[in-house]
Image (cartoon, rainbow, N blue to C red; front, side):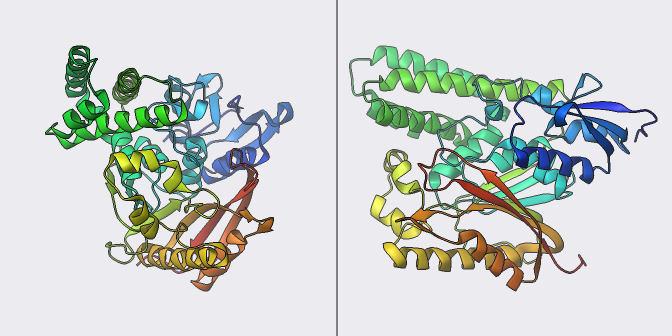
Length: 407
C-alpha cells in the first residue's frame, strides 16, 4: 500500500456530463477515503490524501488520469470498436434495450465496498453488464435470467476470451461453408451448422452472432443475412481478442462468473450467500422484452405465448398487468433478501413508467418493500434516461443496506 505524501490531480472522463455521474464520482472518492477539493468547474479534483493510490487507480470508474497517468479503466475503455465509451471490450455485443452503463456499475461496486474474491448477485442479469464489470474487478458474479437470450449473451460476453483459437478456426470454417452454399437457404444452414458444434461455449458464441443477424434483418429487412452473420461474428471475435489481450497486458486477475437460465422468483441458493446484490428489474410494463427479442426467442425455438406466461410484467392487461408485476417483484425481492448477507448492500436501478398518462409508482413501492424487510435506504440517486419513447424519463439508483451484522 502506498501512502500519498503530496497533492495529486484527478481528471474526470470527458463523457461525465450529468449530475448523477458527478455524484457517483464523488461517492467513489469517499469509498476510497480520498480527501479532495474540486477544481476547474468540477472537471478535475485535487486529492489531498489517497490512502491506497494503487487500488484507487485500478478500480475507479470515473477518473481518467491521476497526475496525467492513465487509470486502469482508461486503458480498458480504449479497447473499443464502437463509438460509445460504455460499449468497450465485449459490452457492445447484442442490441439489448435498457442496458446498464458499465461505468456506473463499476462505481457502484466500489461504493458497495465489494472486494476482489467476494461474490455479487444479479437476479436479472440481462445483457451481462454487471457480470463483465465485476469480472474485470476480480469480483465473482452469479447471475440468473429467465430469458435464454440473456443467458446466452451474458455467458458469451464473459467467457469467450478463453476460446480465441477455437473461435478463429470455427469462423474460418463458416466463411468457407457459406461461400460454397451462397445460393442456398443460408439462415437454415447457419442454424443447423451451429447446432452441430460440439463445444457449448463455441456453439453459444456463434448462436449469439446468429441472433444479432436476425435482429439486423428485422430492423433492416434488405440486409443480407449471411453477410450480417459473418460481420457480427468477426466483430465479436475482435472484441474477444481485445479482451484476452487486455487481461494479459494489464495482468488482470478476473473474478469467476456463473450465469444460469433460471427464475429470480425461485432461487436455489442458500440463505446469507452473497456479499452484495446489484440489478435492474425488468421494465416489462414499460418495455416489452418479449416483443423486443421475439426474433431471437423464436430462433431458439421458444413459443412466444409460453414465454409471455413466464416473464415478469408481460402477463395481463391494464390494472391486472400491474398487479401481477407487483406480486412477481415482491416474490423476487423476498428471495433476494433471503440470499443476501446481513450488513451488505442491495442496489436496484429502477424507474416509474407512465401508462395511459398515469405514473406507476414502482420506485416508491420498491422502497416500501425493502424498508419492510429491514433495510435502510442509504442513497436515492435520480438519473435521466433516454430511448424509452417518453414512457420513462428518469430512474432512481436505490442503494439499500441490509440491517444486522454478518456472522
